Length: 288
Image 1 (cartoon, rainbow, N blue to C red):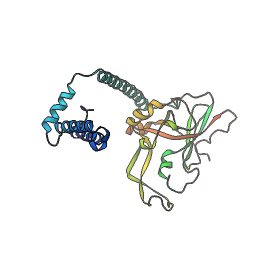
Image 2 (image 1 turned 135 degrees about the horizontal axis):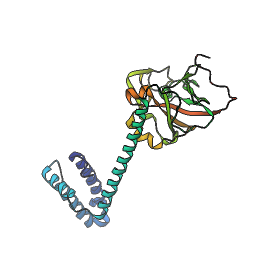
Image 3 (image 1 turned 120 degrees about the vertical axis):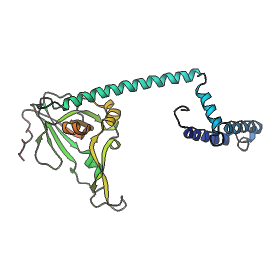
Protein backbone atom coordinates (compact mmCIF):
# COMPACT_ATOMS: atom_id res chain seq x y z
CA UNK A 1 0.00 0.00 0.00
CA UNK A 2 2.86 2.37 0.76
CA UNK A 3 4.04 2.00 -2.83
CA UNK A 4 0.62 2.11 -4.50
CA UNK A 5 -0.89 5.21 -2.89
CA UNK A 6 -0.03 8.79 -3.80
CA UNK A 7 1.81 10.92 -1.26
CA UNK A 8 -1.35 12.72 -0.13
CA UNK A 9 -3.31 9.49 0.12
CA UNK A 10 -0.59 7.75 2.12
CA UNK A 11 -0.18 10.72 4.44
CA UNK A 12 -3.95 10.75 5.01
CA UNK A 13 -3.79 7.10 6.12
CA UNK A 14 -0.82 7.81 8.38
CA UNK A 15 -2.54 10.81 9.92
CA UNK A 16 -5.67 8.76 10.70
CA UNK A 17 -3.59 6.00 12.30
CA UNK A 18 -1.60 8.57 14.29
CA UNK A 19 -4.76 10.13 15.73
CA UNK A 20 -6.25 6.72 16.60
CA UNK A 21 -3.04 5.59 18.34
CA UNK A 22 -2.67 8.89 20.16
CA UNK A 23 -6.15 8.51 21.63
CA UNK A 24 -5.21 5.03 22.82
CA UNK A 25 -1.84 5.94 24.38
CA UNK A 26 -2.63 9.45 25.59
CA UNK A 27 -1.89 9.73 29.34
CA UNK A 28 -5.48 10.77 30.06
CA UNK A 29 -6.66 7.49 28.50
CA UNK A 30 -4.05 5.39 30.37
CA UNK A 31 -4.21 6.55 33.94
CA UNK A 32 -3.37 3.07 35.23
CA UNK A 33 -0.05 3.16 33.37
CA UNK A 34 0.58 6.89 33.05
CA UNK A 35 4.35 6.59 32.61
CA UNK A 36 4.03 4.08 29.76
CA UNK A 37 1.33 6.26 28.17
CA UNK A 38 3.58 9.31 28.33
CA UNK A 39 6.43 7.41 26.68
CA UNK A 40 4.26 6.04 23.86
CA UNK A 41 2.68 9.46 23.23
CA UNK A 42 6.13 11.05 22.93
CA UNK A 43 7.26 8.33 20.51
CA UNK A 44 4.15 8.81 18.39
CA UNK A 45 4.62 12.58 18.25
CA UNK A 46 8.28 12.29 17.27
CA UNK A 47 7.51 9.69 14.61
CA UNK A 48 4.68 11.77 13.18
CA UNK A 49 6.84 14.87 13.00
CA UNK A 50 9.42 12.91 11.00
CA UNK A 51 6.85 11.85 8.40
CA UNK A 52 4.71 14.97 8.36
CA UNK A 53 4.28 15.63 4.65
CA UNK A 54 2.95 19.14 5.21
CA UNK A 55 5.87 20.31 7.33
CA UNK A 56 8.78 18.25 6.00
CA UNK A 57 8.10 16.71 2.54
CA UNK A 58 11.77 15.78 2.09
CA UNK A 59 11.79 13.70 5.28
CA UNK A 60 8.49 12.03 4.32
CA UNK A 61 9.85 11.04 0.88
CA UNK A 62 13.15 9.81 2.30
CA UNK A 63 11.49 7.61 4.94
CA UNK A 64 8.98 6.31 2.41
CA UNK A 65 11.78 5.33 0.04
CA UNK A 66 13.69 3.65 2.87
CA UNK A 67 10.55 1.73 3.86
CA UNK A 68 9.91 0.50 0.32
CA UNK A 69 13.54 -0.61 -0.18
CA UNK A 70 13.88 -2.32 3.22
CA UNK A 71 14.72 -6.01 3.44
CA UNK A 72 11.28 -7.64 3.45
CA UNK A 73 10.29 -9.87 6.32
CA UNK A 74 9.03 -13.40 5.78
CA UNK A 75 5.38 -12.35 6.05
CA UNK A 76 5.91 -9.54 3.55
CA UNK A 77 7.64 -11.90 1.12
CA UNK A 78 4.76 -14.36 1.41
CA UNK A 79 2.18 -11.60 0.83
CA UNK A 80 4.15 -10.34 -2.16
CA UNK A 81 4.26 -13.87 -3.60
CA UNK A 82 0.51 -14.34 -3.11
CA UNK A 83 -0.17 -10.99 -4.77
CA UNK A 84 1.88 -11.99 -7.81
CA UNK A 85 0.07 -15.32 -8.01
CA UNK A 86 -3.29 -13.56 -7.80
CA UNK A 87 -2.32 -11.12 -10.56
CA UNK A 88 -1.19 -14.03 -12.72
CA UNK A 89 -4.47 -15.85 -12.15
CA UNK A 90 -6.48 -12.73 -12.98
CA UNK A 91 -4.43 -12.28 -16.15
CA UNK A 92 -5.13 -15.88 -17.19
CA UNK A 93 -8.86 -15.44 -16.55
CA UNK A 94 -8.85 -12.23 -18.57
CA UNK A 95 -7.14 -13.97 -21.50
CA UNK A 96 -9.66 -16.81 -21.34
CA UNK A 97 -12.55 -14.32 -21.32
CA UNK A 98 -11.04 -12.39 -24.22
CA UNK A 99 -10.69 -15.59 -26.25
CA UNK A 100 -14.29 -16.55 -25.55
CA UNK A 101 -15.58 -13.13 -26.59
CA UNK A 102 -13.38 -13.25 -29.70
CA UNK A 103 -15.08 -16.53 -30.60
CA UNK A 104 -18.46 -14.85 -30.15
CA UNK A 105 -17.38 -11.90 -32.27
CA UNK A 106 -16.26 -14.14 -35.13
CA UNK A 107 -19.49 -16.10 -34.92
CA UNK A 108 -21.52 -12.90 -35.08
CA UNK A 109 -19.84 -11.84 -38.31
CA UNK A 110 -20.59 -15.02 -40.22
CA UNK A 111 -22.89 -14.04 -43.08
CA UNK A 112 -25.96 -16.00 -44.05
CA UNK A 113 -25.97 -18.32 -41.05
CA UNK A 114 -29.18 -20.29 -40.63
CA UNK A 115 -30.93 -21.03 -37.36
CA UNK A 116 -29.27 -24.46 -36.97
CA UNK A 117 -27.67 -23.42 -33.67
CA UNK A 118 -29.94 -21.04 -31.76
CA UNK A 119 -28.03 -21.56 -28.54
CA UNK A 120 -24.70 -22.30 -26.91
CA UNK A 121 -26.59 -23.73 -23.92
CA UNK A 122 -27.29 -27.43 -23.65
CA UNK A 123 -30.77 -28.18 -24.97
CA UNK A 124 -32.81 -31.35 -24.71
CA UNK A 125 -34.32 -33.20 -27.64
CA UNK A 126 -37.65 -31.57 -26.85
CA UNK A 127 -38.59 -28.00 -27.60
CA UNK A 128 -38.71 -25.31 -24.93
CA UNK A 129 -40.95 -22.38 -24.14
CA UNK A 130 -39.64 -19.72 -21.77
CA UNK A 131 -41.45 -17.01 -19.84
CA UNK A 132 -39.19 -14.08 -18.95
CA UNK A 133 -39.41 -10.79 -17.08
CA UNK A 134 -37.78 -7.91 -18.92
CA UNK A 135 -35.24 -6.51 -16.43
CA UNK A 136 -34.89 -3.06 -18.00
CA UNK A 137 -38.64 -2.42 -18.08
CA UNK A 138 -38.93 -3.62 -14.50
CA UNK A 139 -36.09 -1.30 -13.46
CA UNK A 140 -37.47 1.69 -15.32
CA UNK A 141 -40.96 1.43 -13.81
CA UNK A 142 -40.08 -0.10 -10.43
CA UNK A 143 -41.31 3.00 -8.58
CA UNK A 144 -44.41 3.49 -10.69
CA UNK A 145 -47.82 1.89 -10.34
CA UNK A 146 -47.33 -1.78 -11.23
CA UNK A 147 -49.28 -3.57 -13.94
CA UNK A 148 -48.91 -7.35 -13.79
CA UNK A 149 -47.43 -8.70 -17.00
CA UNK A 150 -46.25 -5.32 -18.29
CA UNK A 151 -42.70 -6.66 -18.54
CA UNK A 152 -43.45 -10.27 -19.52
CA UNK A 153 -42.23 -11.82 -22.75
CA UNK A 154 -41.87 -15.31 -24.16
CA UNK A 155 -39.29 -17.24 -26.15
CA UNK A 156 -39.67 -20.61 -27.82
CA UNK A 157 -37.20 -23.09 -29.26
CA UNK A 158 -39.20 -25.41 -31.46
CA UNK A 159 -38.65 -29.13 -31.93
CA UNK A 160 -36.78 -28.20 -35.12
CA UNK A 161 -34.44 -25.88 -33.21
CA UNK A 162 -35.96 -22.60 -34.43
CA UNK A 163 -35.92 -19.70 -31.96
CA UNK A 164 -38.95 -17.39 -31.85
CA UNK A 165 -39.69 -14.44 -29.58
CA UNK A 166 -42.94 -12.84 -28.46
CA UNK A 167 -41.85 -9.43 -27.22
CA UNK A 168 -43.47 -7.49 -24.40
CA UNK A 169 -46.94 -6.35 -25.40
CA UNK A 170 -46.96 -8.36 -28.64
CA UNK A 171 -49.50 -11.02 -29.63
CA UNK A 172 -47.36 -12.77 -32.24
CA UNK A 173 -44.13 -14.69 -32.19
CA UNK A 174 -41.36 -13.59 -34.53
CA UNK A 175 -38.52 -15.79 -35.69
CA UNK A 176 -35.22 -14.58 -34.22
CA UNK A 177 -32.32 -15.72 -36.39
CA UNK A 178 -30.23 -12.87 -35.01
CA UNK A 179 -30.26 -14.11 -31.39
CA UNK A 180 -27.94 -16.74 -29.95
CA UNK A 181 -28.46 -17.77 -26.34
CA UNK A 182 -25.27 -17.91 -24.25
CA UNK A 183 -26.35 -19.20 -20.85
CA UNK A 184 -27.79 -18.33 -17.46
CA UNK A 185 -26.68 -16.93 -14.11
CA UNK A 186 -28.90 -17.55 -11.04
CA UNK A 187 -30.34 -14.28 -9.76
CA UNK A 188 -28.92 -14.83 -6.26
CA UNK A 189 -25.36 -14.85 -7.63
CA UNK A 190 -25.40 -11.53 -9.44
CA UNK A 191 -26.46 -7.94 -8.74
CA UNK A 192 -27.36 -7.03 -12.30
CA UNK A 193 -28.75 -3.49 -12.01
CA UNK A 194 -25.39 -1.66 -11.58
CA UNK A 195 -23.93 -3.55 -14.57
CA UNK A 196 -26.56 -2.58 -17.13
CA UNK A 197 -25.96 0.19 -19.64
CA UNK A 198 -27.86 3.45 -19.20
CA UNK A 199 -28.72 6.20 -21.67
CA UNK A 200 -28.67 9.62 -19.97
CA UNK A 201 -29.58 11.31 -23.25
CA UNK A 202 -32.85 9.36 -23.40
CA UNK A 203 -35.44 9.37 -20.65
CA UNK A 204 -38.26 7.14 -19.53
CA UNK A 205 -41.17 9.25 -18.30
CA UNK A 206 -42.78 7.74 -15.24
CA UNK A 207 -46.53 7.36 -14.80
CA UNK A 208 -48.13 9.09 -11.83
CA UNK A 209 -46.17 8.29 -8.69
CA UNK A 210 -47.54 7.62 -5.25
CA UNK A 211 -47.15 10.34 -2.59
CA UNK A 212 -43.87 10.18 -0.74
CA UNK A 213 -41.96 8.59 -3.61
CA UNK A 214 -39.38 10.37 -5.73
CA UNK A 215 -40.81 13.49 -7.42
CA UNK A 216 -42.12 12.92 -10.95
CA UNK A 217 -39.93 13.88 -13.87
CA UNK A 218 -37.55 12.45 -16.43
CA UNK A 219 -35.41 9.53 -15.26
CA UNK A 220 -32.46 7.88 -17.05
CA UNK A 221 -33.45 4.78 -18.94
CA UNK A 222 -31.82 1.41 -18.19
CA UNK A 223 -31.13 -0.95 -21.10
CA UNK A 224 -30.94 -4.74 -21.33
CA UNK A 225 -27.32 -4.41 -22.46
CA UNK A 226 -24.05 -5.06 -20.68
CA UNK A 227 -20.59 -4.05 -21.83
CA UNK A 228 -17.96 -6.63 -22.68
CA UNK A 229 -15.82 -5.45 -19.78
CA UNK A 230 -18.62 -5.89 -17.23
CA UNK A 231 -19.61 -9.20 -18.80
CA UNK A 232 -16.03 -10.48 -18.54
CA UNK A 233 -15.41 -9.26 -15.00
CA UNK A 234 -18.74 -9.92 -13.33
CA UNK A 235 -20.88 -12.34 -15.36
CA UNK A 236 -18.73 -14.82 -17.26
CA UNK A 237 -17.41 -16.62 -14.16
CA UNK A 238 -20.98 -17.47 -13.11
CA UNK A 239 -22.36 -18.30 -16.57
CA UNK A 240 -23.88 -21.79 -16.80
CA UNK A 241 -24.68 -23.53 -20.11
CA UNK A 242 -28.20 -24.41 -18.98
CA UNK A 243 -31.63 -22.82 -19.04
CA UNK A 244 -32.74 -22.33 -15.44
CA UNK A 245 -35.72 -20.77 -13.71
CA UNK A 246 -34.98 -17.76 -11.50
CA UNK A 247 -31.88 -17.02 -13.56
CA UNK A 248 -30.73 -14.22 -15.87
CA UNK A 249 -30.60 -15.32 -19.51
CA UNK A 250 -27.85 -13.74 -21.63
CA UNK A 251 -27.68 -13.76 -25.39
CA UNK A 252 -25.71 -12.45 -28.32
CA UNK A 253 -27.82 -10.19 -30.50
CA UNK A 254 -25.69 -10.28 -33.62
CA UNK A 255 -26.59 -6.81 -34.91
CA UNK A 256 -26.10 -5.19 -31.49
CA UNK A 257 -22.89 -7.10 -30.78
CA UNK A 258 -21.38 -6.29 -34.18
CA UNK A 259 -22.19 -2.58 -33.74
CA UNK A 260 -21.48 -1.89 -30.05
CA UNK A 261 -19.90 -5.09 -28.69
CA UNK A 262 -22.56 -5.29 -25.97
CA UNK A 263 -24.00 -8.54 -24.64
CA UNK A 264 -27.80 -8.67 -24.34
CA UNK A 265 -29.80 -9.62 -21.27
CA UNK A 266 -33.01 -11.35 -22.37
CA UNK A 267 -34.49 -11.21 -18.89
CA UNK A 268 -35.17 -13.38 -15.84
CA UNK A 269 -36.57 -16.82 -16.63
CA UNK A 270 -39.68 -17.30 -14.47
CA UNK A 271 -41.29 -20.14 -16.41
CA UNK A 272 -39.76 -23.03 -18.34
CA UNK A 273 -41.93 -25.57 -20.17
CA UNK A 274 -40.81 -28.51 -22.28
CA UNK A 275 -42.64 -28.97 -25.57
CA UNK A 276 -43.61 -32.25 -27.15
CA UNK A 277 -45.08 -33.07 -30.53
CA UNK A 278 -48.56 -32.81 -29.00
CA UNK A 279 -47.93 -29.37 -27.49
CA UNK A 280 -49.55 -26.46 -29.27
CA UNK A 281 -46.72 -24.73 -31.15
CA UNK A 282 -46.19 -21.00 -31.06
CA UNK A 283 -48.23 -19.14 -33.70
CA UNK A 284 -46.29 -18.60 -36.87
CA UNK A 285 -45.18 -15.12 -37.84
CA UNK A 286 -48.24 -13.13 -38.82
CA UNK A 287 -50.71 -15.25 -36.84
CA UNK A 288 -52.46 -14.07 -33.73
